[in-house]
Length: 178
Image 1: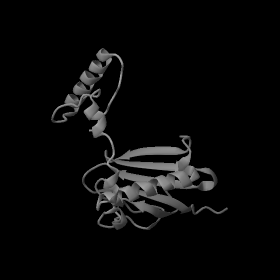
Image 2: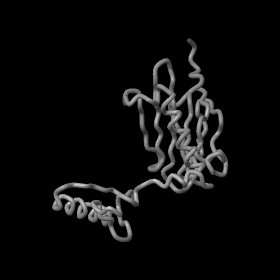
Image 3: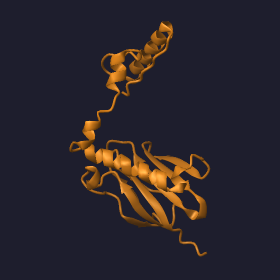
Image 4: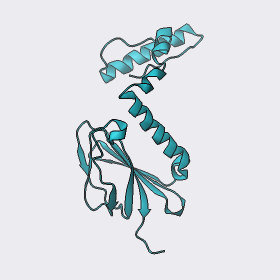
């Protein structure tokens, strides 16, 4: 679990937060002791080890996140916090489909498989030609290789998503006459 930490001046509030965390961990079935949110060790344990980004395995994940942040920063449809034009669906209980529609038909499709096992999903109502921008299983991110098609037309077939995988598509042709 993420090491949550606090620094309240009121010791009783610190104690109440710790007890709340203990109850939360118990409900979720987390093994082991619950870190004290007001302890210096809890704060220290949450610090990033920036040297890890240079090591094999960690470097690829670091580059993956850098790429996702670059896309978010440079694509106006994805950089706006406005929820208008956003559609989220849950498929098969563990696959999330997020569609983001922007101005002038700039539309993005993000698929997330929250399951450990591969899933095949159909996406009714999604039409047009789509280009894959990012697949979390790509070799450049330390994965075994992309598992999703580079181009898809009208999403007539199911898309196979790898366990704990994510893929981002961009609409390149809506198929509508101007």
